[in-house]
Length: 345
Ligand code: UD1
Image 1 (tube, rainbow, N blue to C red):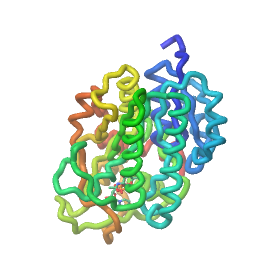
Image 2 (image 1 turned 180 degrees about the horizontal axis):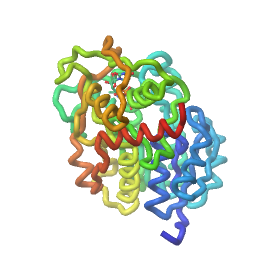
Image 3 (image 1 turned 90 degrees about the vertical axis):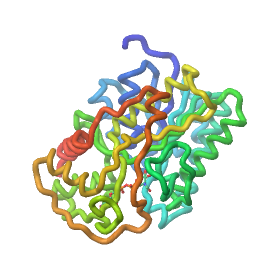
């Protein structure tokens, strides 16, 4: 694409795992000018070099804490023609949120409210919010559709997403010129297919796939499978793993959907999952196959707060956004492994 757009899309948390992959897709699929807002509280400046290595494009990042409204207003006042905001910036560790709930409520909700105030001040009409399948809690009927009623949030993190969705929906209702999409991610995994960008855990990872790749790389000694006695086909928990580039692609489609006024409701909600439930042991098998090595793991006790079994019905997002996940489980694991090898041991 040759001519550059005069409108800007603001991506909060642009140095983060899903934010950076979304910036790559936006740069490759659209002509919008992209500005990131990230204070690197759980990410790294090098991400922008990696984005440039993949796309050949430099991205401007505004290093401000979104919870500081004055600093945010000042930084955003310099952005030309903001047309939409994709709001990723948030904390996302379930166990950390149980340990320090105030940190999660302050950061995840404070930043969301400030970003919506900016939308109101500058009359920015298009908004995408990073939500999570954790909003559903422990449901009775699978797969979950967007209409599956929420159960109690299993963690303060999940509660910030339930409350965040409501805040966005309430605000959307109150403004005539404002539209929003809530994207409920299932389990984003994998890395850019080049292996040049991926998840960058700053400390010991909590999530399964970085734990697997770091164990295979010898950084961690052994993976523990949290629970082998659940009522599932092999006793381990079931999740809907989805490639991060497929998640990123859905954001580009959601943004175009809003900008082109195709939405049927002021707030649209979509599940972002492949629709396939995969057990922890099946994920490990896939990793062993594509990396051609045995993983050091053992089946251990259950982890507190784990949902047993959850996967998506993704009919709505396929139909409305014309989105289809491209990567299967093996491709997710292979890209994650390529990224780990690239990061080094
Ligand atoms: C959780 C949230 C999700 C959130 C994500 C952010 C729920 C249902 N899901 O994902 O919404 O976006 O955190 O981090 O609350 N496992 C092991 N050993 C390990 C690590 C994980 O067996 O060392 C297992 C877990 O028990 C689970 C699966 O792997 O069954 C996936 O775990 P994880 O990657 O941590 O993600 P979720 O907890 O599903």
